[in-house]
Amino acid sequence: MSANLDLAYVDMSSNQLNGTMPKFFAEMKKLKYLNLENNEFPGVLPFNLTFMKRLDVLKSVETAICVTIDFR
Image (cartoon, rainbow, N blue to C red; front, side, top):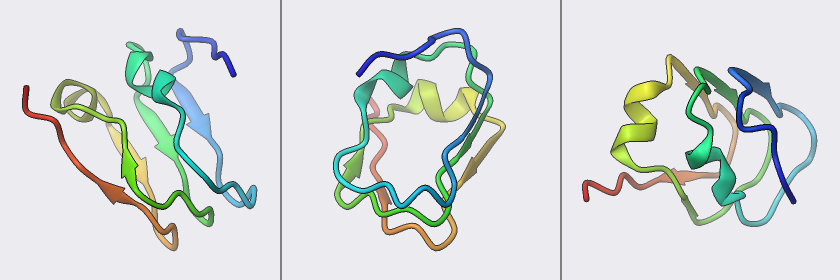
């Protein structure tokens, strides 16, 4: 799967998504808003500290996820 890396707003809420979160989200340098509500992404999200600082909003209410921050 590929992505438009220039997107600033991504709403993937309520799409019955599950499985592994694609790593390309961490490469989206302009992303400010990411909504993952009402999906199932078990395991670890591939987000590092730089990515998390860049986001203004990360919504994950009622989403089975665990965010692990890579401080490297």
